[in-house]
Amino acid sequence: MADLTDGEIVARALAGDEGAQRALYETHYVAAFRLACLLLQDTCDAEEAVQDAFVYVLRNLHRYDSDRGSFWAWLRVVLVSRCHNRRRRRQVHLVSLEGLEVVAQPSSDPQTSDPASVLEKLGARRVVWEALQRISPASRDALVLRYYEGLPYAEIAEILDCSHDAARARVAYGKVQLRRLLVASEEGEVCVGSIVRATKMT
Amino acid sequence: MGEIHLSEIDLARFSQSDGNEAQETDARQVEHLRWCAHCRSIVADHRWLQEEVTATLAIAANALPVPRSKWWVVREALSARQRRQETRWRVSAVASVVLTICLMLSTSPVLSTAAIARSAYTSSPEAGAATAPVSAPSISIVTPTPAVVRQVQAVTPLPTPVLKLPPTPPLPKTEI
Figure 1: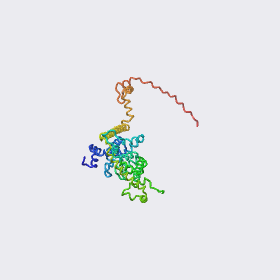
Figure 2 (figure 1 turned 60 degrees about the vertical axis):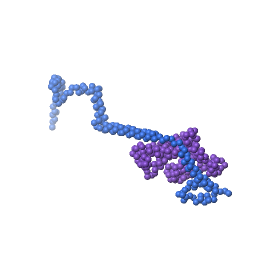
Figure 3 (figure 1 turned 90 degrees about the vertical axis):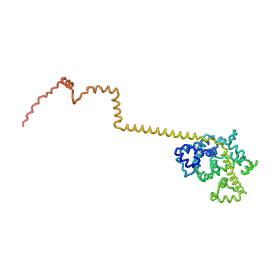
């Protein structure tokens, strides 16, 4: 399977080849999990969202159009949608604020790595990471898609089901929220850059 | 000096603009930024934030403890769905066959409800007992057996009542 393109693997999976289906899953699992985790800020939810997305995608492989984009691009659209659904359900149950803190808490197990503890070593970036968890989910989604996935606004707009301008606005608003949080966290300081630059030096 | 600064959201959007979006950028913002150090510093903050967010997200994503992939969960979900679909197909196929048979029975003249009721009536033991005396003599009208003929001859005919008409009165004579 290693020397086959995504399109060929999809064709085999569509013909009922379970090995090909598994190859698609294994190839994209880690990337999908990381993206879901950044969007949901919860590893359990992220794992379930990834499984939901894969079940949907493998069941509806006949809908995949390779001319419209890569398999990962299609999976990403489905995954973001699943993450939104999961977050909506979580908001209904009013546990979102606690859930947002899960990833930020330092791990008690020294064997496992987690973003907060890794970023702790890097100093300033922990502040940015914690601020990222406090901004609105819509803005965080846009920031993750823009700066983690590196997508153009047109694609972000398609994934988030909004206009090109709205996608740009969400990214901008996310940055505004981030800057305000960073400024608020360091009272008396004015410039965010200077705060973090100062933190880096200490 | 009462300076009017640009809104932060506009400055954030300005900081996001790359080569493709430069044409869209409002010339007024460029002109304002030329002389406003405050707004320039906010734009610088946002550009710095972009880099920090990119780096932070990349580091955080790589630091995430990725659980082992559970292909079996996905496979189970897929096969469960397939099983449910097959069961649904089977049930609907059986239901349609039963429905077709019922329709055929109800529309067939031979197996209409009246015929079924009649056959049910004749086949029941009570119905047999009731009809037995009626069919017992089994006398054929076309070819009477000698015994029947003898029976008929032995029977004395009932006396036929004699009809006696009164005498007709004579016509009255009329004089012309």
